[in-house]
Length: 300
Image 1 (cartoon, one colour):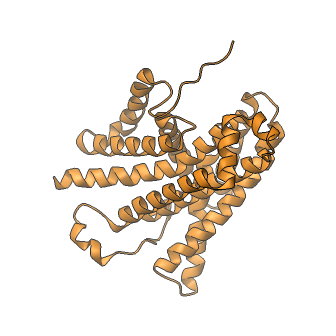
Image 2 (cartoon, rainbow, N blue to C red):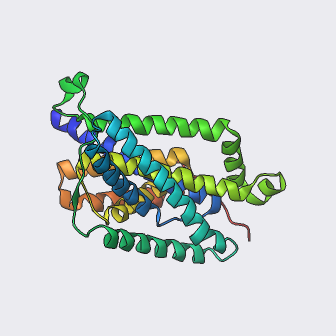
């Protein structure tokens, strides 16, 4: 039972991170039908930003929870600026081009950002400090659940709740939903679609930064390539849940994380990716639009 609980909470942790990154994929796709392959690199840049910020603040005497919050805040602001700039430089000029052009631009930006960090930092793995402190009240559960796992899951749950409230009840959230349903009609109704797209990239990038900081603190090391792997898995989670669906991205991330965790624990870590992508293929055979996605018939 203890081993099962270890795998369960490990899967929830992994799935929570996938969900945070998958939200960026699914929000951008829902608004402009673009698969932003550079999104995983934003996650990686968030981790590096937090590492640099935490290193500087540690020298100034900061520690504990304040160090985590300040490093995380710096990563969120920096990545939000990156996401905004990325949209303006790589995607906005291609707004009226065929759908293939921004897709190629996204792949190009992904490769560019990877190599930029490789040259600016190093190709080696770097140690990441344990920014998440231990909590006394969790010591009774320490046999099968780490404090960092609790923080990651709780943070993800709060972020999902805030994002849901934002999408459902704020003026910008309603504009985002209107743009997602019919961009032309939204423009005719007075919605500033360009602003909506920019805000979507900013929010998605900020969520990826949160994921990057939390999982890096949990694992304890980073390198320039972590964004590619995490991005592919998060994209898989978004497709699994139904790309374009925010609840679907969360569900897909959790299902993928739990599948990987149990497959690694009970079968073999060698087949972790086989089970993850095998599950994706299996579900898409029976539900091509994903678990919570809606099938859309194209007009002829």
